[in-house]
Image 1: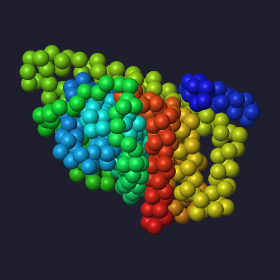
Image 2: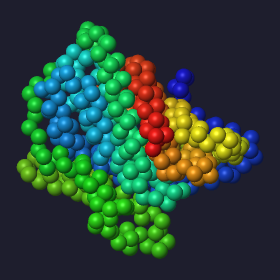
Image 3: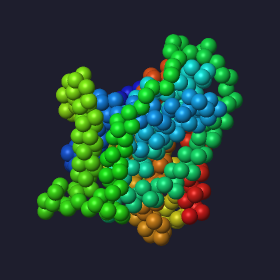
Image 4: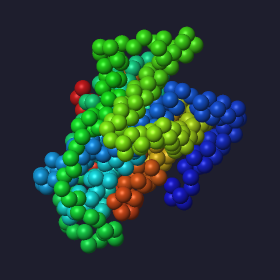
Length: 427
């Protein structure tokens, strides 16, 4: 991180070193090749990012953001917490943090800067909202693939466990961030970027604004535990691929969203011409997801396998067995530290949850709740990582320094994790 070496090179090299120490380079190679084509997270992540690119191409994401931000123009005193909440809400259907930051930042940053907020506060509000865990309220979040593989539960079960952790964390983080922003002098003199005033509120097309929420609604309706409209497994899988039904269901929901976004472009001749670019946008997004997200998960899993081979995973299990009360704090802190280094919350959850699963079961804890804590800790660590894509994008959109953004949001995220731990202990 300090020397700005590509995180995939550093994690991959460390994985090879650990494999050599353990004398099992073959296991590192097997993990690499297996993870590279693992449909449990390749399908949902690539389809979700493809959907995010289609939302951008059809401007459906902008209409959702405008719907959420237009009231903020009239309530200046609530601008800072409102900005964070807008990013959080958009990150629920758009599970890509970077994609959410791009969609929200183009509208939100000019609004915040014109109100006299500094680049650091504006970028921090964008970063905190888009990255601190909104996607954990979506059953299609890729983190839940790792949890479901061991607990054999659907993403909706993980959402139910995450709500009581994520919402207290959000409240505490927003409160601390709001307090820090009010202490800051409201001036734009330090901003090297010229910012245009936001102007009048733009007319929102409600149909376009609803499209980003469609896959989320579908997953809640057809998935566990509601199953109001159950989907036959044979529609998406056969006998050999039956275990992949949940991940394919997520991908199918995203494809339905892509089709719905395309239909919103049939109004004018100009939009119909632009509709022809939807297919290209989808596969550009899927390719970006494979390059920037799946590739990182692959090398992180190799590093995790190396950690397991040299016995560190067993040490975590022994420590948890000696002090079961330490499982939840460790499930928050260790994934956060790992995510700070690798810049990926998904990779951190994929690698570390398996180390907590058996100790949680042995201690009588709900492993799904422990998995939710791991996911929330990983999300917090990603938001504090100077190499995370969402941090770099928020810095670019706001004109702030990435390290300055990390320093601003770090105490807020620590307060949020503490609030989540208190909520888990009381529960």
